[in-house]
Image (cartoon, rainbow, N blue to C red; front, side, top):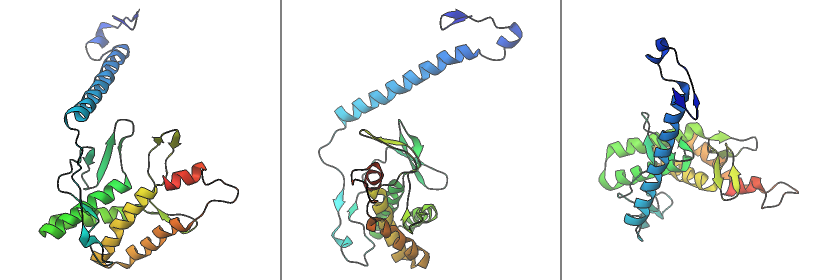
Length: 224
């Protein structure tokens, strides 16, 4: 049997039951190439045939009052094309380079959309989905030594020339988590959520370390 330019002799007793590791290399290589072509074809199809200048989001004036449960944006037409839903009802984000990962902002946004559906249609199942996302955010908030509560991203991410190494935090994730938890507190009135929110807001009060430029990697990770 020849593979990758050289011959490998396999005993007859083995060849009937298992494939050569060298043969598997060729199979894996072809599979990876096929996956890349599939991603490329799908990207071209979306960019050429599914590109739209309008985005299915609507602003929500009812979100203004301090005691409102509404969020500022809402849609019932989002594709959720990068979602991988877990058996526990918590979505993961699927990416070509990062695989399937938990993204705090995405989980918060899924919860807020379901809360919006509950408010518009009195759909109790959507309310349960929202509260499930709130419970995940509550259990995955990390309290730092300075008292700030953050939601780290458990994966490496390349942003331009900056490689964000896990666990990194983002103002976007932080803001979305706070938005979901604020409304979770208004629904449940649980003191534990209020305590968590006080810590979550503290991160925006922290400055840069003495002697460090505001353009330092640490601050860029925080404010990405």
